[in-house]
Length: 292
Image 1 (spheres, one colour):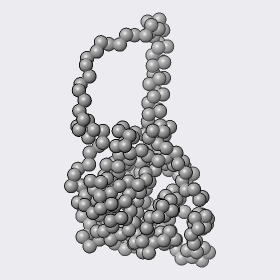
Image 2 (cartoon, rainbow, N blue to C red):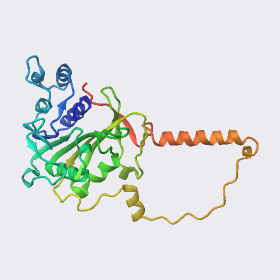
Image 3 (cartoon, rainbow, N blue to C red):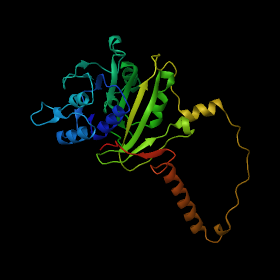
Image 4 (cartoon, rainbow, N blue to C red):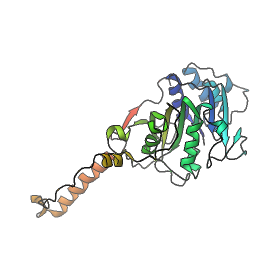
């Protein structure tokens, strides 16, 4: 778990939009996975001071200096163990202390929650740590990271959880291939497009999520449900009438092998298009951060 170059660009974009860093909580004590020289370069292009990453600077193994450079007033960390000297030692599998709720302007999970067994409880804890008007950020595993943690996630989960019912709204969601030179794609909200957002890739993928707490309400008082099922339940459609089997193409009797090959190719192309990053209805290419 850590803050890498993609997470840094995402936070810089949020800062440019006016997000208040104020009091920050890192979920897990995050390592800083960006070299000092790169930090100085990125911060300089964003018009931010880079003295914390200059020659002779203090230990920068962890990400506190990065959040400070972005404008944080205070930076704390929460973890299940004290082995990396986190400020707060708490088990996110259990409800968080009442005195920690609504104490932070920005809560950042850089790859911790997929390792917590009781994920709904851990996610609820993180949401409850955020003040009204504050932000919750996640940088987490999506496709093709089986075995990295207990879980890998779909965009639908976070659109369904970080919603008005729970006092949140997703402001931005990005998916990208793991690595420092990847392309970013903005992810559509399944509720907005009235369709599932599905993706099949050959590379490991990650999600970047920015959500704002719009009001303080009891979280999960209403159980999240997948959007397309809600649509079916609320607007049930009649069963389609039984129809006769479609007639076979004229060539099917003459060239059955060729006909099957064309059908397979057509089906494969549609499947690839609908479930790939090439589907612009679901995934829109965007710049990572315009100043760098």
